[in-house]
Image 1 (cartoon, rainbow, N blue to C red):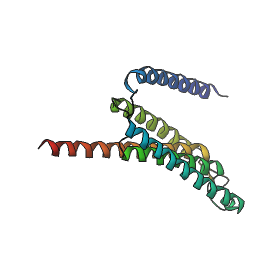
Image 2 (cartoon, rainbow, N blue to C red):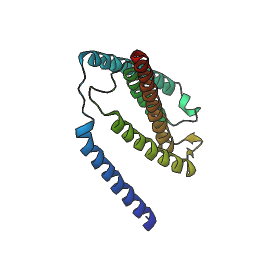
Image 3 (cartoon, rainbow, N blue to C red):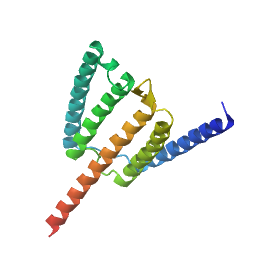
Length: 178
């Protein structure tokens, strides 16, 4: 292991620990919210839809594996499974955002969005550095760089949907005040 690689790895680990400690400290104060009964019901339906999505996609994955489709696809099996997991998470998150139960009552949205932007930026840096140094292995998309890219896309979609939902709410509130 080269010295520069070890130094970069150590710096990355220390930076991640510092960010984790700060997020953990501030999340105790700003990110705890209570959910009312309607929100709990919506979240339960969101879990149900996400679970059924996962079951359906895993069934398709097993069918594709048994038919030998992964030998023909330019995607590794690991990346396909990761995509399935992220799809389930996205179904849950987007359903909850759509039905106003993503955040609890009294949750500070700015802190939450700031944490999500940090996740997006860190994964974007990881994805682009990984894409430059070996994104395709044996003719297939490698798990490492493309999993980070999938994270960037998933969290960007969540952030965009949160922004759209909050803007719609602000417009509706302004129209009610008139």
